[in-house]
Image 1: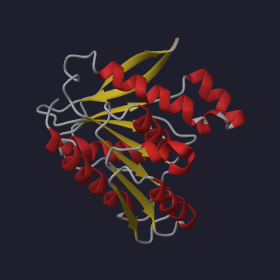
Image 2: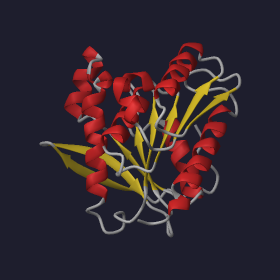
Image 3: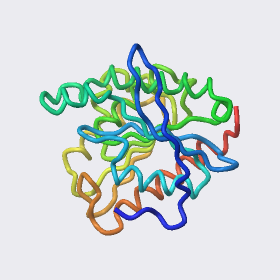
Amino acid sequence: MQHAAGAIRETRSVHIPVDGVSLAGDLAVPERAQGLVVFAHGSGSSRFSSRNRYVADVMHQRQFGTLLIDLLTEEEDILDQRTGHLRFDVDLLASRLVAMAVWTRQIPELRTLPLGIFGASTGGGAALLAAAQQPDAFRAVVSRGGRPDLAGPALARVTVPTLLIVGGRDEVVIELNQQAMKRMSSASVDLEIVPGATHLFEEPGALEQVAGLAAGWFERQLASSGRS
């Protein structure tokens, strides 16, 4: 996956203490950033995901900071590769996303930036659960090929503006997202279906559409809200 042309890639490694563990991440904040987007990776993925890094590049071009964080430690990830259980533990993942929000409020250059979450696959469910648990912490959610159904009854408590992006050939996930929308009556929710795209948006031009839709959503929901 190529980086978006002209993207700002001045990143630094961070280690964030959460409930007795340390989570590794990459933080990039352009000058005059108008918001910060936390990336919640999907099942079996990490902060090194080429797809999410491409989207992050586009966010930088649009003057958003990004925090690509591994929500599992190295030890947990090794265990998860054998069992596959932790990647579906949305309660654990959501609690760590909430901890990310708390951490950003303690960092001078970040504390005034409105926060959004970009969740992929199972990370989409975790993002929505985190938004339901802490509605004042996050201003917007974007889910790429997400599993909002994993948030369960918490969907009814989501109040932040949410964009669901699904590939047109990802039929099962389209249905799951459509069902989730019906349960999110308290939130402003849009569903965008990218024609011809499968679950990973590997088709030519598909990921570019995802990045454009996500950046546009955050511009409307985060940049318009200004610094808190």
